[in-house]
Amino acid sequence: MDKVRTDTTLEPRLVRCPGCGGNSVYGPSNAYRPFCSERCKQMDLGAWASESFKVESSEPGRAAGPEQSA
Image 1 (cartoon, one colour):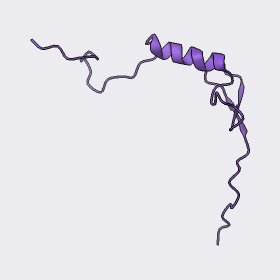
Image 2: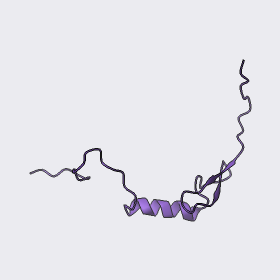
Image 3: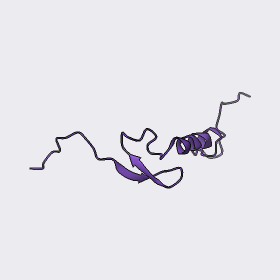
């Protein structure tokens, strides 16, 4: 039989911050996870807000946004 882990506490681990590439604690002690700081979190939010990051449309050639009636 496999042993089942009975404790519910997880060890925080170090991950790479998606903003700056530095180390970031991924655990409850880091309110900005997966980012290392509030600054990196806000920079990422700003990039999304300014449309620096975009999600591709599944229909090529179709403009994103509200549909216009002819």
